[in-house]
Image: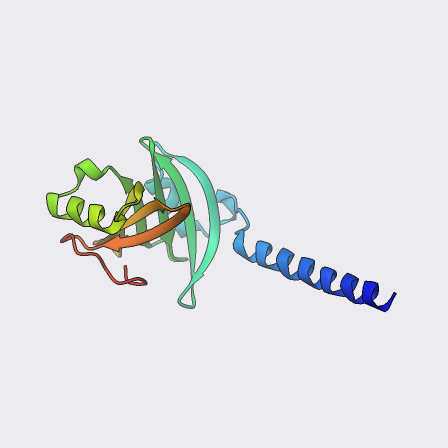
Length: 158
């Protein structure tokens, strides 16, 4: 009987922790009208002709940003907007064939033997900083970054 009670306690704790982790991973969706006026203005300007899929708050390096996920011209585009309405980051899906030969070669090397699922250009404060390469290999999903010059960047560097 004592063992059953201990098992129940452990099971409840595991389920509670699991639910907490799931809740942390999902970002609550916001409506456009919930955003500060400067952010709304920027989102309207940036989403012309695009379908807004999700809007959420995001804390990055201790700073609040609003992440807007869109589908524009048949590809994904995400922007981060600060509370003042400034676009701080843009991730936009690109076709590998549209990249320079050096970047294409870097993407190929980054994938190794895996399959390139998608590539996104990453712009921080208006400057192209890298390409994010999404790879499927051995049943896993990987992410690598390639510089605008085609060099594979160390993990954690964008």
